[in-house]
Image (cartoon, rainbow, N blue to C red; front, side):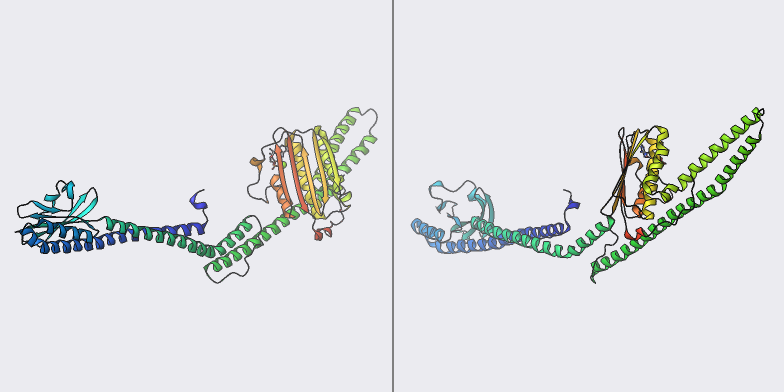
Length: 476
Ligand SMILES: Nc1ncnc2c1ncn2[C@@H]1O[C@H](COP(=O)(O)OP(=O)(O)O)[C@@H](O)[C@H]1O
Ligand SMILES: [Mg+2]
């Protein structure tokens, strides 16, 4: 799952929760430092007060070397404050007279770690020890003449307090992040709801539903977007309708033009060829038995004329299938398929189910032209031995299938990329014709096994009245 596929509302919520958490971490760090500074200062002040008190109260006992009183004083003081780690008093000769370390003695190096000058009221040293930070305060007694008091204040209570505060602040930061996540998720969900709505509408248009509109768009920025979407789809629908109209006109004028050329060929060329044929026959009947050479020439001329007449009639049949007008779709298709495929040793099996005697003219022409192209493709490309044509009307939908057992082809290579109106009646033209009547057409082909062209076209009621005018051509 990539970041771009994560829903927007989760991204926003995570971002906000992350920011809250980061701010929380910064705040906790600052708070820890502040607490450490404040408590540390307070500890040092307390230590200094204790040391000064001891210095004042121990002078006499130190001068008289009253060790008992000194012990009393030192022990009482230590017990009275839990943060006091140690106390010891050194006399003017530098010897430790009393200490709270008991038998273990003063740790190595501690004695020299803080030596206040006689004129100082006190000196603070922060010592890093195995037990953690110790704030050591040394206070001279009688300006150093009687000795020095040393008090060590332990940082452990400070650290424990910092630990406690850090824990509760972290919990608060985490809770704020969770709350922030929930609130921003709901907010982002609320904000992206109209966008999701718009997205579904755009997807619907992309899948071909140009009637998709967004009802009652709002007045805010998203509302403006929704209005723009509606305007865009209206324009698209209009353009699509205009395109279909144009396509219909092009195809119907193409049909009309074919009809006109077929009529011309029939009325002019075919008639003239027939009359030439009749003239040739008249001349032939007048020739004497002995005019063998002339008769042979006439015979060849008659054959040429007959060939032209057959070709002309075939052309007329292709341009304007008179059987479609005379007998209807099924016989017309059977006749066309057999004429085209029998000469190349390809059998034709045609079945029709549920077809009424008369079909709407546009549907009939469309089906005929689609089948004509499919049959031509079989004749041109397939090398098939059997062609199966099946036509069926089911629930007002016309289903057709033209299959062959020929060599097949890679459909994807031939699939139309963009619909074209000028590309004749190739695979693309078949699809265009079907879609013009609101139908669909698909081509399936397996190399070495054959090809199948299937289409379904709804039989619209208004088409049923659209019968063709009576044909004027009888080409065959
Ligand atoms: N029934 C078929 N059998 C084998 N190949 C076919 C068949 N129908 C179509 N084709 C292949 O698809 C291509 C495209 O067909 P089409 O669009 O009708 O163009 P055209 O027939 O003018 O070549 C053909 O050139 C051919 O290679
Ligand atoms: Mg073709």
